[in-house]
Length: 324
Image (cartoon, rainbow, N blue to C red):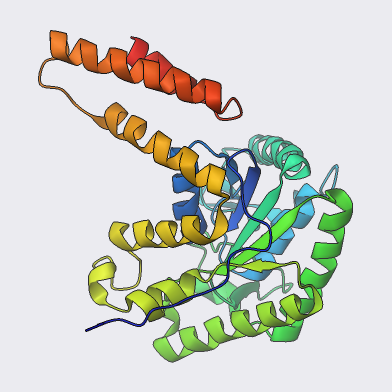
């Protein structure tokens, strides 16, 4: 007997290689996937503006990387003695306007370089709800604990999202003609909006993405939302807040991702890297024992052989660890 719905979906039109440079933007689920990419030695970068949830804030961030000198002065403000940016996560703070501006400009420069040289841009939308400053309708990425009366909350329309992304995708293509773009929708349910409201939000994102794919068939979609909420569909796959996927669910999503999105050579590389990752995490009872020294010596040989076989991945940290 089969006690779950099997969810089958197509492989990517162009698969991801471990030699590709990957740029991720979006919600905390993008961060979850980034941690996997980092673990398996992909050349990757995630969220230069910090975690972003709504499509417009993600688009604002990407547009700023496409400009040589983005104007950010109007985005900076002081709250309770700390400087923040309306387009950045709360991890971007400064003791002065100049300090914060320097941090943001440096992050933008690095993001621009990485985006220019990336083979893949992976965007994870979280919510179609946005917050705007009541005073001037500026759309904000983070409220930074400013009193709620300063903002107005609303649900984006499908047309708003598709219009912005149609222009953004054209600009990205001119900026980096070889860039391939993949979208996903975060499986996290934003219950603070309300369950019905969350469903409206996710439906809005799905409809907007479908329209974008209809006009641009080269866009890829990875169904993270459907895997977690329709295939797994059980609270044992969630954290105790009942909305965030737990480690088991994230590992399963990653497994489905590797099966459908990666080249065969990349899969073989990941299989070869796995025992090295596990060996590095091993904590011996006696580090000075002959057995442990032999263990490290053997894995040093394996790591050096793997580095030689895949020169475009960086295993220098592991080589240093086993060689110490």
